[in-house]
Amino acid sequence: MDKELVKLARQLGESLKHKGLKLVTAESCTGGGLAQAITDIAGSSAWFDRGFVTYSNQSKIEMLQVKQVSLEKYGAVSKQVALEMVDGALENSDADIAVAVTGIAGPTGGSEQKPVGAVYIAFKIKNKEKQCVGRSFFGDRGNIRKQVVKDAMFICLNEFSQ
Image (cartoon, rainbow, N blue to C red; front, side, top):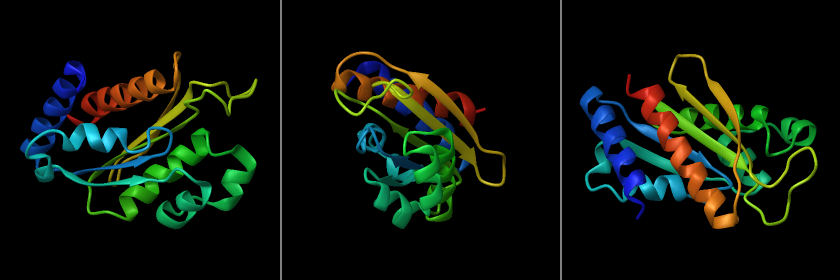
């Protein structure tokens, strides 16, 4: 595994464990890559509750209560859907903190409005305001997915370990 990612995951885990907090992930374009990076760290069960891999629109609706109307109006790769994913992850877990990712890893599926590499990362601490950032990544499918996992981990570390 990538050394930088291992370092980020360990730092995040130490911070969350120290505070007695648990994390949940909701992933689409990364296909569980974020949860895998976290669970590659021995002892992560002390601070990682669960991960939702909601690749299809139907799974987003069923597992995270993303609204059908949001998917139709904004598309799966949107700020609105990422924010609904993060809410659903918290509501359907025992976690205190959630991170959600949705995007287009390619090589197909992009458009002029949402090109390959377009990603939204949402994060929320229970009972606090949720946030979402839009990102653009470049490279092949594997590279984009790896960059998204690293960025989501970095955001978690910066936002949740304070």
